[in-house]
Amino acid sequence: MAEFVMPALGADMEAGRLIAWMKKPGDRIECGEIIAEIDTDKGLIEVECFATGVVEKLLINPGDKVPVGTVLASIREEIPSIKPPSPLPETERLKISPVARKMAAELGIDPAAPRRAAHQSRRARAA
Image 1 (cartoon, rainbow, N blue to C red):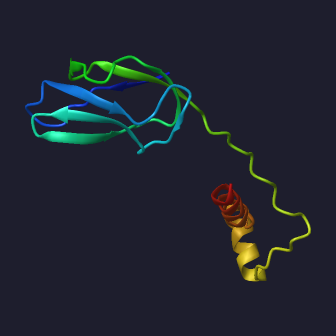
Image 2 (image 1 turned 180 degrees about the vertical axis):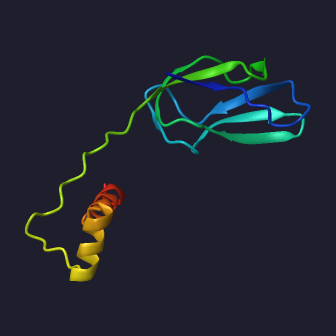
């Protein structure tokens, strides 16, 4: 569970007034998305959330003035699912010169390793 706290929006800020919530309990929120409007001595500022998940509970009501660091809301974080990489197709022939193949064998290097890593990287970016 992540906590959204009253941020320090200036070096000398001690407290801020919650003006409005941009999300309500049950809403999904992404990291970087605006969650609230806070009034400070310097003006009205839109504040972004630093967690991705679902807004669980709003703990402060609009109009309340609270000190920096006060928990304003709780967010149920969602852990992204990670798919295992698919194996390199067995039918794909590795194109390598005989000299390179001999050097790899002498150095104990698997010549297919960089190709597998690149294949897995492409799969991860596509997911």
